[in-house]
Length: 416
Image (cartoon, rainbow, N blue to C red; front, side):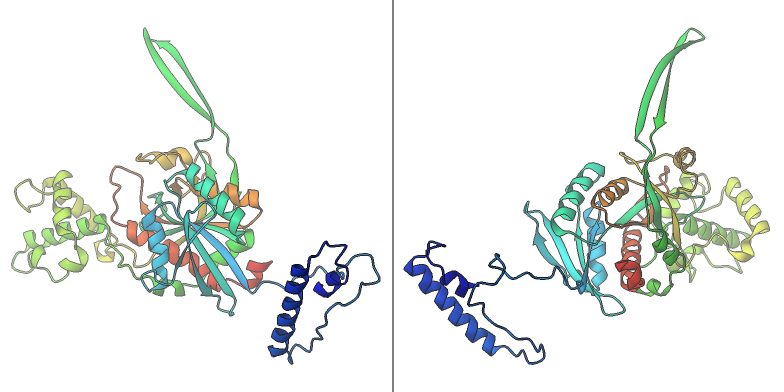
């Protein structure tokens, strides 16, 4: 190309310095080409030294691009501890992740995983400065535009429907929707000489859905990923409370046959949060205020349980998390409402999870025309007993499952 340009110095307004530099570049280029080991390529390299027959100085090149050997996946989390849980899935305390900056000088992280067939997966991860739909949408929009990932994903924690899921379970959204969107109408009515205010929301429900083939793959997903979980699975407070109540019952009924609960061989494993459990039971009027004696209310409940299922020990937590595929609802505020899911099910009856960012991820994915997947671990039930007991575990299992999905799912389903 340079040879051709040098043949017409007047046309390109070349000065002597330009010609000298161009000749040096040609000389260096020839030497570098000769140093290359190109025998395997069986390629003839030539320098264009005269104008081609066509009027363009650049030979036409077929518009063919070889398929990329890597697949880029952008994962967004809502909060720092969720991002840390994802990064720690490298089993090296996150040390394999490289910190990078986008065009706005905002940090994101990158690591590389291998698919089971050898394909490389570039995992890109970031979190917004604040939780919530707006900040998440801004970050996801900017990064998808700049990094151009093949897939957009989200991992982290959510609240779950107590009737259908257990703490630590994983919910994969087959659709996400925002149940706060719609029209708010309020009016007052005079009833019995009192002004009563009535409020109603006319919901505008739009969903963003999981790829149907991915859904089928998740339904048949192997349980091998469970062995990768490193955070110890907590014992729920319900499990610990029932264990303690039953052991107290045994000891109080037959003190010569049963040991005190605090001396029981199972105490450390079955009731590790002993100091938190006792005040909880006293608050529920199941233990007497100044002793570890069962109240009448507790005795009645235990007798009923023993008649029904003590032999099966149904109060015990499940050993492993389950995978649920269901709608996940997004809200603009933190929820603590025992009736929350009852109201949501009027909109999407199979909804099992509620959180604050997934809808934004679905909307950005549709705008960018890339597939998305939302995976959340259940940390609480959004009721008055909500706490962070399962948060660390839920954050890890959601991240572990998401990475297991991308590294084992058929590449045909990823590249199609």
